[in-house]
Image (tube, rainbow, N blue to C red; front, top):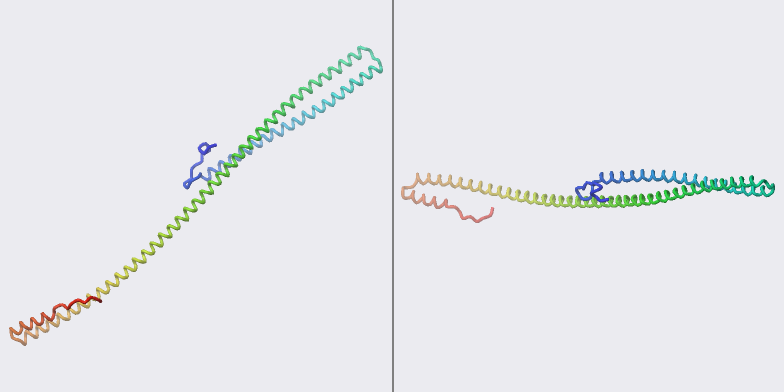
Length: 248
């Protein structure tokens, strides 16, 4: 029987649905058990009937032998007593008739016995056929179990690979986060250093501005106009920016 005739539903990871497979195996086992029980009942009944017929045949054979013995006894008695020919003829005819009846019954029983033997042989053939089907069901069940086992192993492999990949991604993410945190700390340090230098430069500029203003006020009060101009130039020269040498 093919997979389409059975009606298995295909599983996501390959193979078939476990419930469909188990249901099919259970139904097949029940059907086989029922058929086997029915055939066993018929076989037992046929064997019982065969035994009964065999016993009947044996009984009739024994009776036939008894009748034959009786015929011989009658013949002997006929010889011994010299009965009349009519009585002897009647007795002999009666014996022959009974023998023929017994023979006819024996033949009928033999035919019945042959029919029972033929039916028994047919039952044996049916039993072999059912055994072959049972073997086929067993092979199919083992094959399906093997398919399910392979599917489980494949699913486990995929799960392990997915877990390993997830761990690798997580490790890479942690590594990147650590690198970003390191860069952020570096940027914070640079920002704080730049802020500090800016604050120092601002304080220096404020100090020098105040100094210049004071010097201008002093120059305006103590020197003539030409000297004020020279003093102003000196002051402006003194506030030229100093060359930048780098570093913190």
